[in-house]
Length: 284
Image (cartoon, rainbow, N blue to C red; front, side):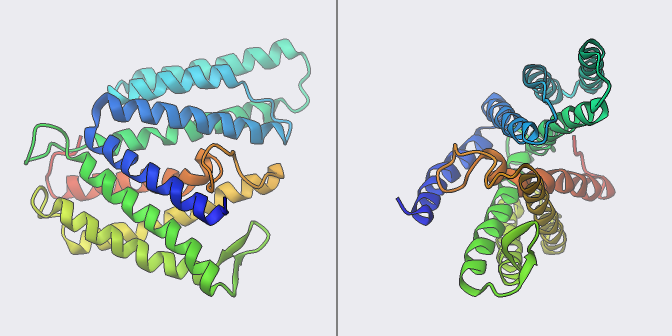
């Protein structure tokens, strides 16, 4: 099957599933976050092996599982405790290895991979933020859906914009396929979709979160998404890998699909926190 067709078919299946899980929220959403973060850690571990970083996959997966659950329940002391315990385990592994050569690189590599998993925590934080004046659950699903719509539109229109109009390379040594024309196309449509979806979902629940805030948020998340996309491309080039995985037909791996979102989500969370708190609204 043609890669472009595979890409469309995969998106047609995954987009409704993602939106449905976002709307259901609760443990449905948390289980999806745990699954995706675990797959991302496995993919990043494979990339790390290409650069001799010796990832500790089982401790990474166990630590990630505990962190995602503790973050869901806002048990931040336990999250810090898990990170501390993971660092102790890394020290012990290196001590018993008995060879200090490359130990800093191996420890740093494992902490970085755990950090990638921890970025998924921001999905849960956005999903569970702010009481919804129009229902019994948190209104975070409205913000999460808006974020997904904006980033997916940015990724999609960047891809097709680059394919149709691309002439000038954006970062040829990092991601040869990305062009400035594709970036501008994605920027315009990504911000536009973000603002429209946000307005439709928030106009009644949070009317104070108007066009200006939505536009400012949209610009920030698209720019952060670009950094996330190029950042993952940088790591793939270092690992001599075209894709982080192959589980998503036409898209590659989980990291290939979520690289933009993993950097955009933390930024959006802090933007939301600022807008909510500066307006005297309840956030978490």
